[in-house]
Length: 221
Ligand SMILES: *Cc1c(COP(=O)(O)O)cnc(C)c1O
Image (cartoon, rainbow, N blue to C red):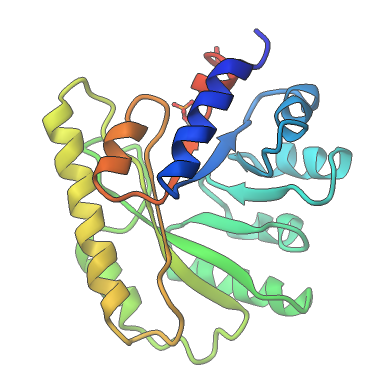
């Protein structure tokens, strides 16, 4: 199935009016399709698998901003650290320490989002409320090569719109809470929530970054 250009144009126009960033989730899709969107002006792409991301990075234009959005194993951070733009799926302090270490080796600062578990499904990763509080209150002074610039979450896979709305509202509240606190010396600026099925609702609830795959690229098998 080819890229849905009409859908891309509509969605990117609507989102830019609302000042919401669009991450095109290109996992499992070939480089030709990514280039199709790139030539229309799309620069932010999201991937879930380290090896796939590295291969695509090598083959595609270097001004693409790559977002890592899948579960990241600590032993694989080194492969993406030299070029990744934003790691959205930080789900442990151990991972954060490793990202810091690899960023140090690459002499760079890596932006990160903390992934918060807002869905009912156990299969999804992320911090619960108390774990998030714990990490936000921990000592970051040694981690000079990372910046936590916001939160990411995935709502439940359900047709219950009210439930999805509640989950997004909860995440927005957490985001606001930590945006206003001064426990870290950098600003929270990104609230990444919303996918193909629920991005409109996410934007209504205050998201400023959505991650959209199937609406642009068609359904993955
Ligand atoms: C696959 C994926 C998306 C995109 O999902 P679609 O339903 O295809 O839009 C967004 N976020 C994460 C974390 C994903 O793994």
